[in-house]
Length: 310
Image (tube, rainbow, N blue to C red; front, side, top):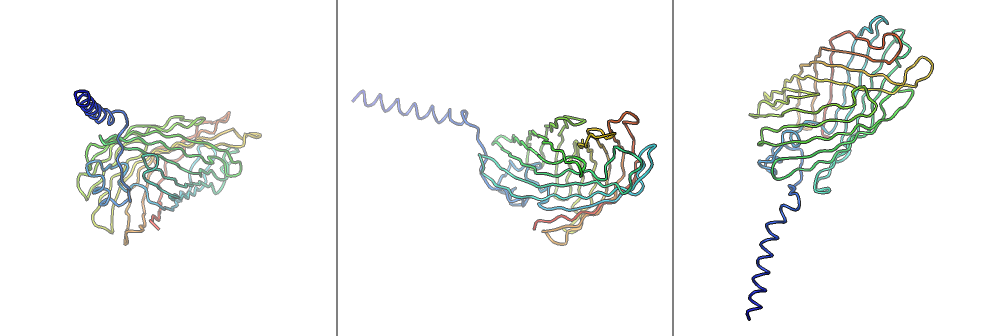
């Protein structure tokens, strides 16, 4: 009788000990399926709703283009520059390895209408590939994201491939405020490590602020159809070249610019965006013997984007 009582007491003590230790032995991840609808996700995640991970910052489909007339390439002359871009979500699955997995396809091409007598400048530069990401979030507000973007980053006539790797850490202070710190490692590029850091804050429904590097954005939600916004962006991309004759092995293009625009959204499923921008800095490093560092003219430009969910 006594031994049975002692055994029962021991079993009870072990059960209590395991109940206390198991939450510490394994990370606690938040279940649930994110739909991309801010109202649904705010209800689903409650206090863990993240302005970086849950707010609709990236449209499932977007297409756009811009035109820059008479860009000056230092002593080499001028040329018109055309840029087109596309971004589309291929899939997104929740509850995958205790987290969320998503895959995107992306493309951006920059074409030079007339070569300004610069042998190292190709007719067009392209970056196109896949962007695969995995994200995990904990019950204490911290989230971890890893991404890989294998693709072609090169002269369109001489394909060369790369694979930038990203690691981001997020902290959700409350449903209106979250923080980000991390970076992207890009082996062989002009700047091999690109920082990702900032804060996203939406104190009220009508205002959203995303301040950080390499991109910042202020959006005003006046009504459901018209949303004015302003952005700052820093881009730095190294493209592989053929390396033949007088052509170098690579070319690095860097730009910083400000834009202001309006997004017209007559329906929840698509929007049309127009923005006017001004370059603060434009730089080309062609890795050639003469004039390897070239400052480009800081022109103004206009960009149109179509963004949708279908």
